[in-house]
Image (cartoon, rainbow, N blue to C red; front, top):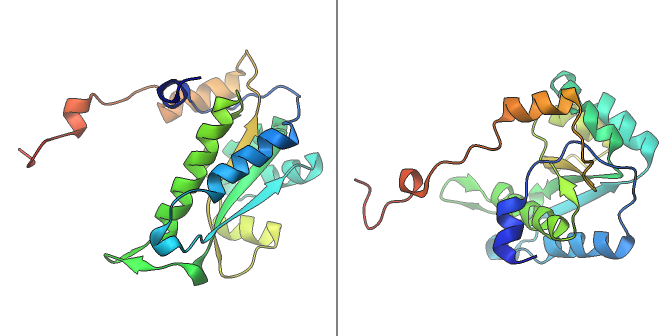
Length: 185
């Protein structure tokens, strides 16, 4: 797949077939995250890969009240929890850069996954406190995002159709709405 095809066809996948992701593909996905740029090369990202079905189901139940919308992750062959080691972070322009750095790394992982036909869906609806406690993450870690990874199913369930419609993921602003040249007029 050409790079722009990967970018333009990637979408949030919430339905998965029961097919494991080969270790070499998973290694490439993780390597894409490791290879990402970070502020002053701090590399504060940390990734927890959950492949055990019981742990995935337990996470779907124990991610907090807002996380009830994430029940579909039970069908995924694996979940990656993208964290930041905040002790390694740097603050620039009054902004903690671990958020930027982990987001860049996680997006590179998702694009790499899609180049292999592996879908993902960035989860934001969870209780960070409950996830950290449930996964026994160090106190200095922040959970920046989570995503199921797996091969997409052809058919969406009514539940995941509703989630996709609610998210409005298929709507993109035209370039002239988001880009100006030289100054903002």
